[in-house]
Image (cartoon, rainbow, N blue to C red; front, top):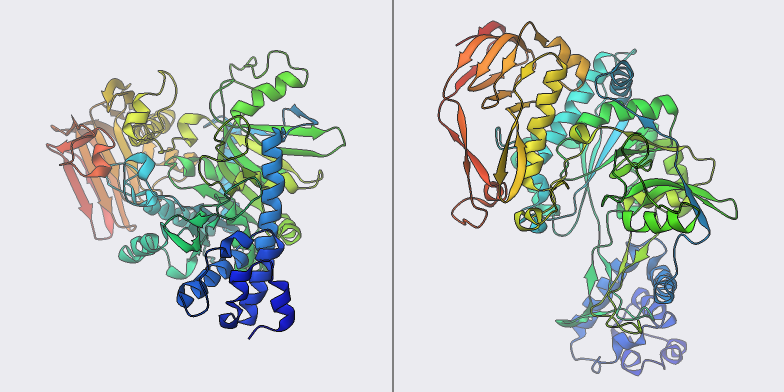
Length: 614
């Protein structure tokens, strides 16, 4: 029961005051926080005691969750919201007082001696790493109703993104153990940040597939909560339009991964286990693990506290640029600056032409692809200072130029790549640039949006994402000495793409380039119309001439040589209309499917030495 002191305290909210009798002491404290922060409007409609009491208590259950899941609680959320909304209304430039310059980083060229060295160093370091996947999103923007990590990365084998990521981590784990000086075995931890939208479906995908070969004890799911929506410039919390006893909430952004890791206790556990690195990555870049070993090698060699993976970007291209910002007061940071802010920022600070290409043909500010490698010790120290909170932003859609009211409620958001904003100038923050063909092919646009992309710009669709995998694998084999025929151009779902030979392999077959080179010898050639899927570890390509489809699966103790002339009718590609609802979503968003006319398919389930020739 509330005391008289409490009753006086609540006199500004009479409807709430008359209901204090049903609230617990903790709920009364939460009510005080709300009133202290200008939220008395939330109780205006409350009826007298005895009416809708269950709903009133469930309102406070939600308030308790919102309060506990945000660093500093609701008071901190509302305070930050008021400041950011005032800045937004005033049109304040977040980069005022900062001058941009090109940060230091490492540019890698695939296949040269330095790249090969960095890959080997990265494999050695991998046993001291933990991987964190941010996977809070559904595939709606793609025209797919499932969780994005369940989408096939490519449809030759049908391997989904999550399976590919897990098999890549396991391949790194094994390769790293082999070269460990102390011979110890250590499982690489894998964390997946989920949301209300994806949590149970991610759990189900893992369990149905026995964690794709990983031990369930290696995998941790951390669910992010949503944050309260804001109705106006005074940061008044928005009630759900369908339920006046519920706050409307929306996702806070993938920056939450830092506070979730901090509060989970995993960082201490990892430090105690001797881990040194944390790698963060996003849900649908099917090429990412091509870049991981060498980037990790760069982090170790350069001793970077933060290493952002990057790709060359053309000036003004619609991808954020990694930039060093130095303030007039001496502060400096290396962060991602969105492309639409980078050009005006440069023009305003003594670069009259803005963002322009340099002698390399690219902007000196490399393109951020949102994959980060942190050194664990300094990362944990920083999170101890911030509680895992990341600098937020707000993006209200105003009704008109007076900026006094919003078209719809807004909320604070944060991005994982903004972590370096709070770091001291002594922090070593750098980047690693790799070729786009090798490292970056995100799948995020639906076919209609992708078809509207101006010619020459990346489609970032399921179509282009799958074609990019075949291109990367074909180019890697070309560099290893295989004559892979050049691609043909084809229009799929309204997008003109290069169609290379459909070549795929399991990560355990070739995780790094020096391994792949040992698996290829003699004069090998693959025609453009061919399909080749290598599902085993010890499969060697020797003097192979392939014109058709070849699928090879083998256990680890089977050594298989692929050689001679293999020719068959192969698999053809049939166009599919993305509007054709008789075709499964995950196929029609690509604009094609395989017609498996003829193939040579071999499976080796017993140890031994085998050769495959037609």
